[in-house]
Amino acid sequence: MNSTNKTLYIPLYGKSLVSKKGSILSDPKAEEIWQKEQFPLKGKAKSKWLAYYMGMRAWVFDHWTNEELKAQPNAVVLHLGCGLDSRCLRVKEPCQRWYDLDMPQVAELRRRYYTESDRYHIIGCDVLDESWLHELPAADSAIVVMEGLSMYLPLPQLQDLFRRLEQKFPQLSLITDVYTTFGVRASAWKNPIQSVGASVCTGIDEPQLLNGETLRFDSRLCMTPEEKIRELQGFEQHFFRLMFAGKASDSIYRIYTYRKETLHG
Image 1 (cartoon, rainbow, N blue to C red):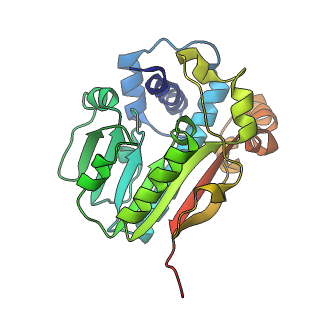
Image 2 (image 1 turned 45 degrees about the vertical axis):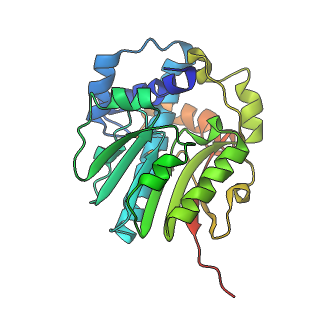
């Protein structure tokens, strides 16, 4: 695996840790995989504070995906840059077709832990390769999940990916987390992903930068919901709220959602 692919172990460890603690996120699959993989993370990458952050981020993405499936029960779900994440198991709302996509080496590893079926598929491909999207069966509606991916793609390529998704599906909703431009600068000297040799390249302050002709910025979600912070105990709750939530988090990291609109006139 290259250094960017290895970053998948950071959220895997975080989700495993919070699940084992019984707070923020229930993810027995992450616990199982982490127990078997035991990737040698170092320093900040194994921080409990980052684990709490990863758990909260995953919960926000899960909640949004569940709500979108309630509103669009016939939509296909595309989880791009899925790593070893078990969102396909955590999201409880029924889904007719779910596609988890990541680089071929990651997809090969993923198949050790997840079984494909008529409903569930794993695609081993670079997300920037245009072929995988053309080969997907037609669908009227899609829900696209991009967690921990956008910051590793140069902005023009990210914009092109959004355009191709927009052209593929008549109805589309999308969620992505992004670094801010300040977050990219700060990550040059203080980022847990450096422990696996990775670095980020794209920061987005204005969500409209990813707008297309009909796919438009829809909302900004809180990365650290208060209801999840309250699941921490005593000092940890107060320290996390002070250091990792609110303005501290917002200056570095954000979650944007997009929705395809119909042009009028």
